[in-house]
Image (tube, rainbow over all chains, first blue to last red; front, side, top):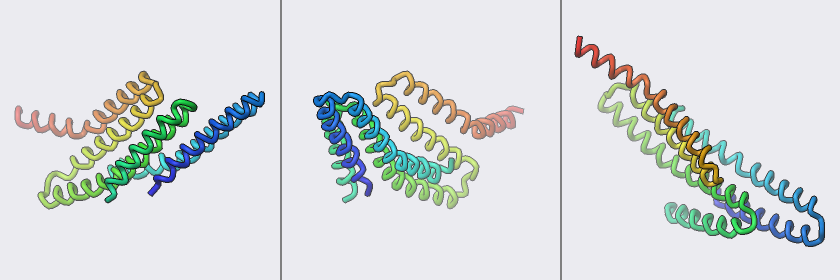
Length: 64
Length: 128
């Protein structure tokens, strides 16, 4: 079961949020923005395979 | 037992999305979309069982074979359009969501065209 994916995404989100706060407090706004962007890309890469799996399943079930 | 796991997963994802929404809205959106993807994949497992049953019943009753694939195609388009429009609406893009729904409705009508043609052929055969 792919329930781990939910926890992974939540963990990445919380981690990026904390990192963002730390980096902004220490006056590194550019790196904070880069961290946000990198986290977003990592999470998107994680779910894109699942979305492909869903589309393939729908295609095979309904004969699209 | 699987159903309990789905219910727990949905509630957990909702709570996590609520926590994430305060700090990072985009992660909350991605989390809810991916939870929806996982739930839909599991829903498709049951739907495929039902589809197989419907196909076997239809072949046992020797119904016309060219209408059932159209029905399943329309159902698949409906699921896809609903998924995409829900994701857009979660992201706050209501206009995009309604456009996706419009495309879904038009595609469903276009997929159902052969059935409509058969109906009109039947009507014209009866009338003439």
